Structure formats: structure tokens, C-alpha cells
Amino acid sequence: MKYFTETEIAALLPYEDLIKALQEGFRKGGKVPLRHHHTVEVENGTENNFMLMPCWQKAGMIGVKMVMVCPGNAVKDLASVQSTYFLSDATTGEMKAIFNGDELTVRRTACASALASSYLSSPTAETLLMMGTGKLAPHLIRAHIAVRNLTKIYIWGRRFEQAEKLAIKLNDELPVDVTAINDLKKYTKIADIISCATLSKDPILKGKWLNYDKQQHFDLVGGYTLKMREADNDVITQSSIYVDTFDGALAEAGDIIQPIAEGVISKDDICGDLFTLVGDDFRENSKNPKTLFKSVGTGLEDLIGAELVFQKWR
Image (tube, rainbow, N blue to C red; front, side, top):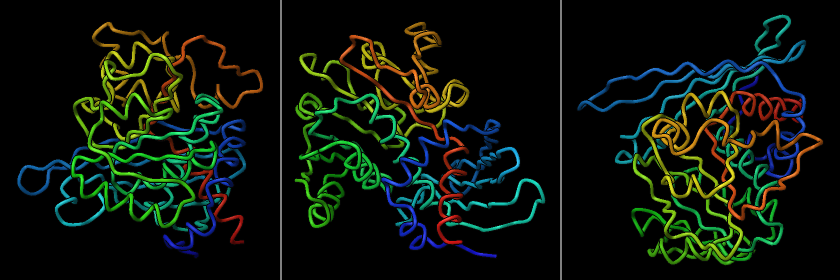
């Protein structure tokens, strides 16, 4: 049985290829039960999140990802998300491969956001503000560059030294100018695309900071529980809202569920999901200059990515 390492997955999953595969995969669809979600109490009263994310396609492949989200890992210099993916033949049950789930996750998450941006952000977008400096941040930046001709990247983090470290690394790698910033208010107004990948429980993207004289797209990736928020209610109400999947967003996305519970928006205010966006008839024809994509992740993205890796290797 083949085990795919982080390095092998990175080599076999360039962003452009995965974005295209996700587009085709969402058109095809699959069976995606809501993920199993459990709280695990660990040392010092800390709570980790344990998840199982299954998905399968008829007469195709079946896969499941085992995920542990460990907020306390930051002080141990470890990634907060640890995961492994298992791919099997859906007909015979034969295990085909095991994958480093972390690399698969960051790439499929970033590419799902880029796929949504390819439909929702301005085709002339040039500037990206990245809120967050974790493992997902550089992947989101690279994936957004794959679908838009970006020329300027701004990176904000709660610890400026981490933002600066990431900016220096990406400046050596990417054909765009990358700068670490402190002033969120200033650069929220400047950015054409704002991507958030944090573990915040309180909004960091403020509606009062938006630039109402330009088109802006908001990409909310970090929050994956009911208690987590990255955008405040003003951002939510000012935007045309899209999600990765309706079921996932309405079950797990604090950025969607909290405003609904408060009566700020309703379920009917969600314009569509990734299945909507990749449909032949989709047109983002609202006159709202603000669009928002909320992602909580779906097992279909994992299955599409794992199958692409396996097919290329085989």
C-alpha cells in the first residue's frame, strides 16, 4: 500500500491542477455525510477537536480523513491541525493509499477558496490582504495568485514577527511584492481580496473598515465551529454570501450561524455554494460590490485531491 508524504503530495498537486479538478469534481458531486465532530479534553483543561470526514462516489472511490485540531500546538512549534487520509475502492473496500492529511488539507482548502474567487472576485483584482500566518496562509496566497493577476500581497498576524517572517519567505519565492503590515484598518480598505485563516473567536474583519467605493471579495477560511468568527455582522450584511456547502455552513460556520441566530440574516440570504458556482448557468449578477465565501471544508474536496494524487502516481 502506498503512503504519500507531504513532499510527494506537494509535487503531485500543483494549485492550477487541483483548482481544475475541484471544479470538475463539484460538477460530478458525491455522497458527503456531515463530519463527525467530537471535543477531546487534554492537559490543562485545553480542548482539542476530533473529526472524521467521509466521502464517496458511486462505483468509484471512498475516503475518510481523521483530523485533530490542537490549538495548544502553537507553543510547541507544531501545526495546530494534524490529519491522515485513507483512500479505498468503494466497490471492493480495498485500501489503496494513505496520505499525509495535513498537506492534502491545506492544498484543497486553499484551492477551494481560489475556485470560489475565480467566480466572485473582480477579474482585475491586484491586491490581497492575508489575515493569519499559519500553515494555510502561504497556500491561500499561492492559490489566489493562480486565478488572479495579483501584484501586491499584504500579510497581517497577531504577532508581527510571524507576518514578517512569512513575507520574507514568500518574497523570495513569488513574482509579487509581499509586505507584512500592522494597520488592519488601512489595508482592509486597500485590498481587493481579503483572505482570513485564523482561529479567532471574535471578528477581526470589520465592516466599518471596508472600502465602499470598490469591489471587494472576502474569503473566510479559519472558523470551523459555532463559536468562531472572523467577520463581524456588518461585513456579513454588506456582502453577497456564498459557502462551500450549505449543509456544512449551516451546521458548523459561526460566521453564518451566529448572524442567523441573531436575526441579522436568514438562510435565504445565502446566494449559493460551490455546486452553484461551478454550474453551467451561474452568473454573479447581483449589483453588490461585496462578495463573501465562507468555507468550513468538505470531504468531497479531500476525495478529489486524494484521487488526483493517486491517479498521477499510478
